[in-house]
Image (cartoon, rainbow, N blue to C red; front, side, top):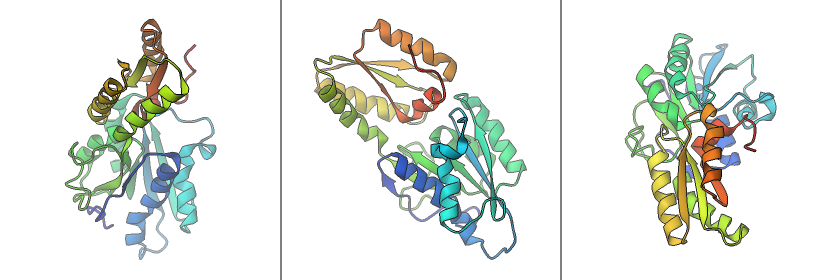
Length: 253
């Protein structure tokens, strides 16, 4: 993928750990492979997540990026380096991250959250942007189409919005007499509306009451769980784009 040109096709599939790691590891190599003729160059890959930086990065899901690169024959420190940026649930930091990575002249930017896409696209139309996942990249205006993304953005389109009915079904099978389910959501995420709509529809069909509670950042997590306890929900569904804020924080008591 030459600079400023996205891939010709965006794969779409369920969002799970294996797909996520595969995407991060392989996708970052797309622009590098296209410019491999620049022998001896140390490629700089930007990596942006909305989550808290894990204590042991090399043993976390985010290690999939460097692991995948190694599987493709690239050696970290010799062929590439990774500039990690973790927003810790504070999405307003994405603009600063974008500016930093542009100033560092990153050769590619890999995003572990769709909430960072607009900030990166605003900062550059030349550096390849690789989405680890996005529920509705076309509807959100990130790309022109899945078959031909156009511009400098490509990546994996997930179906996490369509997973909410199955998740509710599994909860109902696991917990007898489940009538009230909490839904922890981040209204600042571009995936917020499609996920909420599908979850509401699924809960109505299942005869459940869905209780959405918002959490925009890690500081609001405890308050959100406290609100759900007051609502007497029997289970809580944490969607993928909100789990970034929960990750690395203490469990609700």
